[in-house]
Length: 340
Image (cartoon, rainbow, N blue to C red; front, side, top):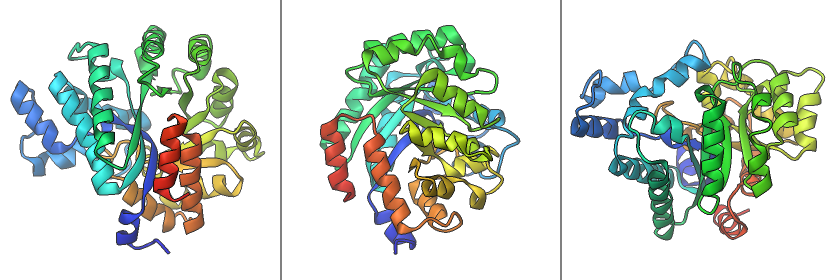
């Protein structure tokens, strides 16, 4: 049994769904704000933390997304980008014992206010990850995100950027407000990704109706779905059957889904239902700093309130390795580290 906090923390883990923008430590926000004379509600960590971190459900997904402003403002220099990336890797490795990590970020969101050069920042993020890998037992990769709310032209620009960097980028993600920017809008744009062999994951079914998940699969042909909880609300079972039949991996993020009101409670999260139906599923922390979580907490919730077994947890790790966008050699190393 791995239910005790010590055993959960010591267990090797895998994470396929983690945003760099959601990994900025409170202390780092304060340090960067002081250095660059940025405004904050407070420069006292004890006072800022309750403002910066979401610890109870927000009114909606959009409200939660609005909480990223302080983190976004922190990406004000290349030194800040390097520090934040390194600290995200360090926390994953040392605090959570993660052995396979995929980090993702949206350049148009992250560098919108600072006007940093995308290419220079990506080269720095990639170099930081590669250097960290060499000195740890963790393998990692970078996924580029297009933020829906920035518009179709931004998505096209971001797709072109990812394609140009396919040697250092392992995949592409379409994230942000699905309700106002449905997947069908991007049907033509993602063809460039498929043509060059860059795998796609899509935030879908985090809000709205289960039909959005079906629309995403039919319009964009993703290899993975981020969140996907609304698929469980299809009483006919056809949406989950479609996910299973297409071999799509669902990147679940239980605590995040509770905070965004995608699920009414942790106990009612559909991960157990997904596993029982034979869907490929992984467990992620999404935005660990802003959502005040990590994989230790997510695993404890899964084994406790959500009713998963030790075997279920091992199944999610197996799905993480198989569904990872990392190259075969790194996936093989991760499988060995994870004992699967």
